Amino acid sequence: MLKPGGSSHIGAESKPAKTIDQMIALMSERGLVITDEAELRQVLFDCNYYRLSGYFRSFQVNPAAGDNRYRPGTRDVDFLVPYAMDEKLRNIILKGTAKVELTLRSRIAYLLASDGNAYTYMDPESYQDVRSKRGELLRDNLLRNMDKWMKMSNEVCMRHYRRKGGPVPVWAAVETFPFDTLSRMLSLHTDAKALRELYRSVGLRTNLRTSSEVVHAMVYLRNLCSHHARLWHREMVIPSPMTRDMKTAFADFEYGEKSVASSLLALMYLVRNIEGDDGYAMVIRRFLDSNEAYASGIRTALHWE
Figure 1: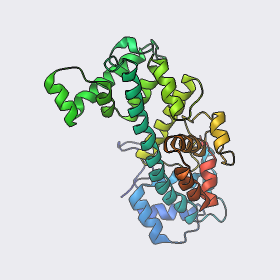
Figure 2: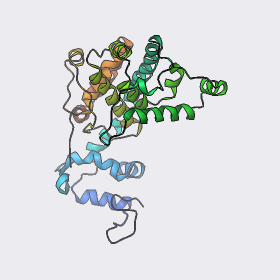
Figure 3: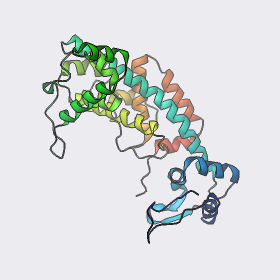
Figure 4: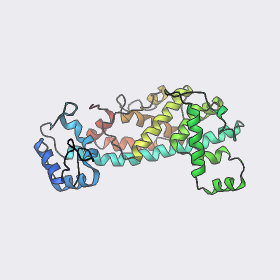
């Protein structure tokens, strides 16, 4: 049986697990018009009630206040369609963020090496002396992470360097770093010349901090998609800054504050500057144009807490 609520611990406050039949009955009692019970039953079995609940919140009367009744006329397809479209959009996004990630990796390695910093990326002096709110040096955590990923790598080139016992050049090291570690490296590195060249090469002609925030937002967007998170009506915790160049490049692209669409605009802009055309942007725009109700949910962030 599946459980749409409660704790796994046995106790007075634990809620009993509900069967799929009971879940469907509850949704029906709350006013949902079920058009295809077999399809709804399969989705509940495959995707988890709580994952699906993020999609039907916008069709409920006042979920933040505990009123989970569905607004009159709400049908199961109203949220099952966005659920299915999110899966397709996540795959589209992952292709774009992969392009951004791989490009940033390659270009920063080249630029650092060209600047005489091919072997200084593990030196604490290569990073800013910035502390977290808890007083920890951010560069210390970064250096530990970079060292961890290099030691964990089983790539042929890394085994070669380990066997020789010599230093690992930055162009080999960056290939072991995940996108979030690369993003932290870019945000803390002190080689401003290399960073400015890197960001300008992907169309970010703003200050280094804003540019690093754009990259951080791409990491967050990529992570959402990698973990199969809901995009429809999502409020982005880490939204991308909107530069003047981005707005000019896609002046007719609609987006709301903290919406997924705002980060999509940034992603389209970066890929356009990397690839030199609007092919990727057109894929996203055609996809959103195929369903206006879904597109509205990508352009609009909702907060239910």
